Amino acid sequence: MARYVPKDRFYLKAKAQGLRARSAFKLEEILQRLGLPSLRGATVVDLGAAPGGWLQVLSKLVGPGGTVVGLDLVEILPVAPNVKTHTMDVRDTTAVAAIGLPSGLQLVTSDMAPKTTGIHSTDVARSHELVRIGLEFAVAHLRPGGAFLAKAFMGEGINEVERQMKAAFTELRHLRPEATRDGSREIYLAGKGYRKRPG
Image (tube, rainbow, N blue to C red):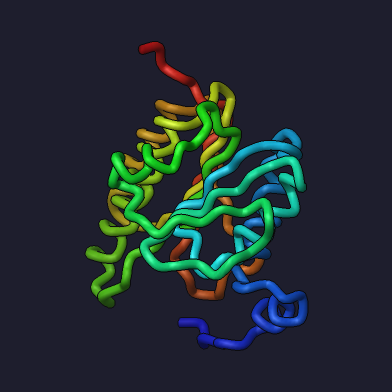
């Protein structure tokens, strides 16, 4: 087992750059590797957005003419003028509908992770359930050709999660960014080319 280093170089780099979380570097690398179309002027949604590191990255990518919407169970401190945050459960379709998201999002991201129990099978199962919740949100709000990115724990059941994502997207990729801690079981699943179903 690799030794856990709480203040590694990515933590220190994030602190120096005024980023709220080291995971911001994961998102930057993933989006670069995916080669998505420009997000300038787009509206994107980040699920499980607290404390806001991903929102900071997305804010710069969409620019002043774009909008980033962050959703989380806990309140998020203000990020930038083009970032809107809402404290809610993303499974609450009534609450989501009330915030008036535009139809046809270009990108939905999710860094949602369960509160870990230390029981591997339980933590993996809960992680996969969060991916499914994110996927359901993405399917409801993405435009054709849009993309969805979600964190997942490797383990039993990951093949079924992948199958569900492959059914919705023309391309599925597994990504493990450099900023991922040694010994971590997390990966990122990225779906590109959303196949919007009629009806």
